[in-house]
Image (cartoon, rainbow, N blue to C red; front, side, top):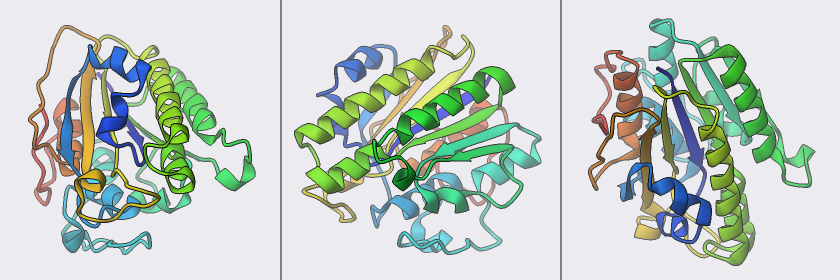
Length: 254
């Protein structure tokens, strides 16, 4: 049993209805298009809430400048490390380097977008993640895909370019699914949505996120509509048969 988390930065739930690949994969997933993120609906606070299962006013990061969380709060990677789980993290937005304490992740890979003007860092992250998954067989792996958010800021949320970027991300998700074993579980989500050329508000377009869980085996799941990004860490520990940290506020999705 292993768990793969794929997060598509800035992916609005309604954009999934415009992705042919997403429509195909949804038939195999338990999902809600009415999940919620935290406020402010900004990338780094949302990610810190994901790994700490706490609101920003508890962990302290309220902008895209990281603030170390208090000692009373534990992150997902630290909990997994204490339970001797092998983990991997692949990303293309540098500020996410602070999602775990030094030494908590078994393997990381970062691709700097400015080094690749052709915008292929999503593909490079996925390539390395697939290789690590297949060869090292981690217990948990987090693949972050940042291009949709970049396109949203550049061309607008729900623009043609944005919808195309969402479809490209779902093709990566499809390819990653293909390397998973029958008892593995795939979780797909976003950190926030967006409107116009921005995000960060309490608007539904910014706050609502998709949350999907799929196992390739016979077990089937159901996800409640009011699921939160803070429920992801408890879900991962439940799947890996680990006791969630007592500081976490989320509830397992399954």
